[in-house]
Image 1 (cartoon, rainbow, N blue to C red):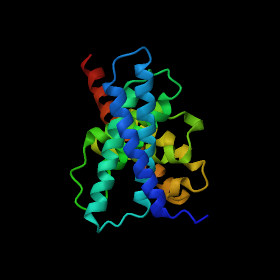
Image 2 (image 1 turned 135 degrees about the vertical axis):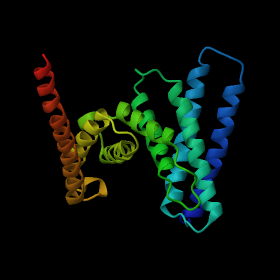
Image 3 (image 1 turned 180 degrees about the horizontal axis):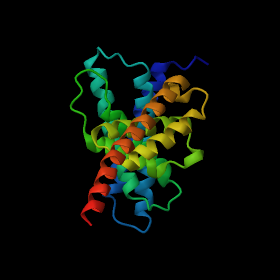
Length: 226
């Protein structure tokens, strides 16, 4: 039996995606029936999974100097976000699949937000909000894997730069500490991550110090006027 080459694997994956797209279209346009929503969800889940596989494979060997390859990867990512978001919208928050689907949309949204490929458009803050909010809701605290913890830490860090929020600041520290529990610290390096957390805590302490400097004289003024 001849060895399976990457090209053949790619052709098989491309064919599977084509069939999955057709399946989604078919169930969406089929006459309504009792289990229509279940069929739609299953078809979308298959398509989303296949697209994510192709994105992962393409990204690993992407030639950033090949405009066609970059455009195809971006197109797959946009489609994966749309399909997975539609799947998520159709699930109830209590569905066992909801957390995993939410995390997938969050990861893909953050990847699009911080697109480092050539000729990227302006980053959309809505993608960053989706990444933070969905990853926070889909993550399971101490059960979160290293990849999820890394995505959350980076997304929260980026959103904090745009709009300071105490909730985000607290979550940033929490997920930074979670990331430190992994030997590789998500690829950031334990020393680098420790320094980032230390800087965040120092910034918070300075902010509290400034608030105290403002608050104490004000209280004295109020006391003198009473």
